[in-house]
Structures are given as structure tokens and as C-alpha cells.
Length: 333
Ligand code: ADP
Image (tube, rainbow, N blue to C red):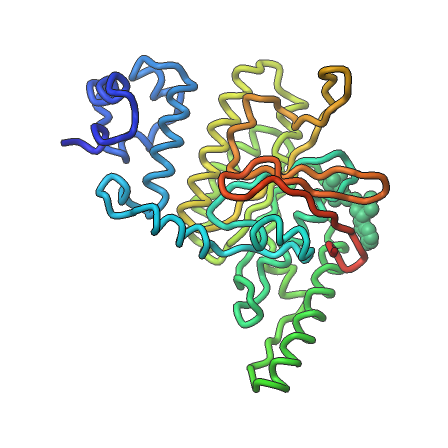
């Protein structure tokens, strides 16, 4: 029996895959959705769904454990609960996120200009470095800046506040529990943010293709921020069907990276206002074709003078809102 014949797909699709020579999970996951659709004579949307399924199964363990029956729902629950998370420095926001931004997932964060998307991106690039002794991941960050919005002075300011908080925490732990004191300087934090400025969608595609190699050589990377995913695609793309295909491929690659390296991918996105049923509503840029590409989606919005975050989509978290503020020290309650 082939791996493909055990996939939870319709028998006709399984038959088509096998006839076209796609008998193992690795043979499927190594091709693009365009090639798969052509070879198997299915729609691109069907090919995309198959790739997503295969990636979920293969990526869940680095092997096809689900196919082999090695993983059950109890394991999956345990895995979900024990997923490392990156704190946002806003405990109310962490709480609706189940503890913070989850590693091994792609999280999209959308909102209007000025709501704080870049601030969250910078905060996560700093917070991912909080050492394990302080309850963090001790990781590094990749920041992909498509809009030129990353400000190093702001990153330094947030890093300085983070170091102060850690010193206070470890000072307390040392005094009361003789725990080791953590030595970390704001400059070290800046050194651990790998910054890439991309100026066109072709550069963005090339960089995303290079990430697997880069992260293999820098295994401490635990968060990849893209600020923003949409900018060049909204500016430079006329062929919308092709844009959807390219972005779906990109989303799949991010999902693979998240699973393979157990890291968080955070895609910042712009929103537009859509007029439906007599009122204006916020809609994420790139429209519905993009909307299934991320595991979790958080929408940032204004309520009067207050900033709020809303869990718009998640397989495991309930829909909920939390307010947050942006201070000189970074994100806070
Ligand atoms: P977006 O990426 O969603 O367009 P930003 O992340 O750039 O928005 O957020 C910009 C907002 O962050 C500013 O309008 C301001 O309210 C807040 N902000 C930025 N820096 C500071 C700071 N040093 N102190 C307080 N608030 C700040």
C-alpha cells in the first residue's frame, strides 16, 4: 500500500495522484501546486489543498507519522498545549492568544496604518530573544521589511526596556532563589535580528526561497516577521490570478518553514475598507483568495481612542478581543 493511498482524500483524487506517479508524501510535497495540478489534471485549488494536507502531515513530525498511525488526538492536544509561544509584552493580548504568538504556525496580523503592526513586529523580534531562564525561547529573529518601516532606534528603545525588565526579574530570582543572573545587553538583541530589506516582489520571492537554507545555517531563528506581506503585490501586480498563485505558494513555504524549524511566522498585512450590507467593514488586503493561507489571524482596530486586537481566525482559540497600548517601552496592557 502506498502512502498516497492512505491519505484522507477522495478515492478518485488518490487514484489520479497514484496514476501520475505521486505515490509518496515526499513526491507530492516536493512540487508546486501549479505542477501538481497539471500532472494530476485537477484544479489548482484542489492541488493547493492537497499540498496543504501533505505538508501538515509531513511537517507535524518531520515524518509521515499520521499515516503510520503513530499520532493520536491525545498527542495532538498535548503538542498544541506545549507549543512554545512568544510573549507580546501585553498580558491581555497574550491571554487571548493562548499565551502568545505560537511557534510552528503562520499568524497573520492585519490592521489600518498606524494601529501598531510594525511595533508588534519589532516587539516580537526582541521578545523572541528572552532567555529560557526568564521563561522565553532564547531565539533570534528574521525581519523582512518590504515597506521600509523598521526603525532601528525604536528597536533599541524596546530592547533597552526588555533588558531592564529581565534584570529586575533575574535580580529578584537571584536574591530569593539564588538563580543565575542573566547578562544580556540591548546591543546583543539588535545583533540577533537579521534584517532584510526587499524592494520588489521578485526580491521577496527570491528571499523566501532562500530562507530554508538561511535558517538551516542559523537554527536559533525562532520568528520570521514579514512587514508587510502584501505591499509589493498590491503595488506591482496586474494579473490577479497569477498574484493569488504566487502568494499561495509563498504561504505554503512559510507553513513548511514554521513546521520544519518550529518557529513562528508572523505576516503583517494591510486592511482595506469594504462596503457591504450598508456599512463599511475592514477587510484584509488581497481578498478572499488569500484568507485561507494562514493558520491564525489577528485583526487590530481602533475603538474610540483605544487599540484592540481581535482573534479573527484560529483552529484552537476562541474569538476574543483584548485592548493593548503602545508606550515608549513597547507594547503593554
Ligand atoms: P502600522 O505598522 O500599523 O502602520 P506602527 O506600528 O508604525 O503602525 O505604529 C505607529 C504608532 O505607534 C504611532 O502612531 C504611535 O502611536 C506608536 N508609537 C511609535 N513609537 C512610539 C513611541 N516611542 N512611544 C509611544 N508610541 C509610539
